[in-house]
Image (cartoon, rainbow, N blue to C red; front, side, top):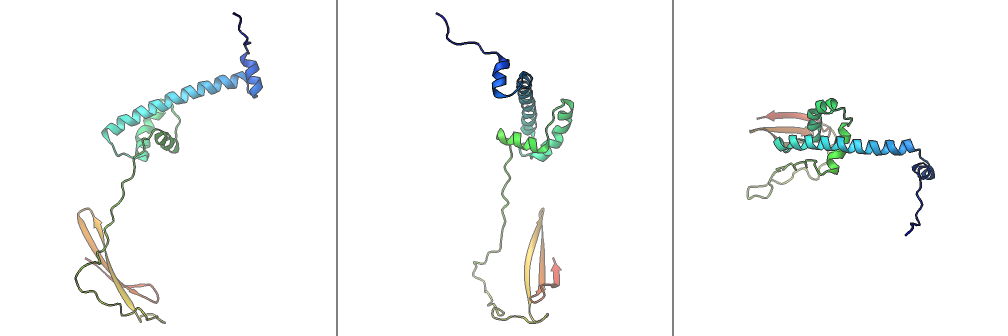
Length: 159
């Protein structure tokens, strides 16, 4: 049985698409080379992440840099982000739990005496607020006294 298909040469096929044979082979070689490099980087990332599960991409890039230079792999920080994202290896950021003041309590709440007042000069109305910073296990409380008209801090205390 005789085949009805004719064999088309690579040069003619490349000519139809407007590329040279050299460009065809170069593209195939670069694709194979970049795939191998990406696999090498992913193996290194998985190895590092086996010891440091929550290490971010920026730190990973710093640790991988000598490996990349040694193996002549050209990938930047953003390229590493893209590679890890494509392979579902980015570490998700933990959401910060912000604790705010609980205003729903049975203690006495004082009325707002300046609600209807509009200041026309400095030092007519001062307001105060307290906040805190948590530094490790230590809580620092800071209280500000602010002038309503100028919005300047006229006093504070840290404890």
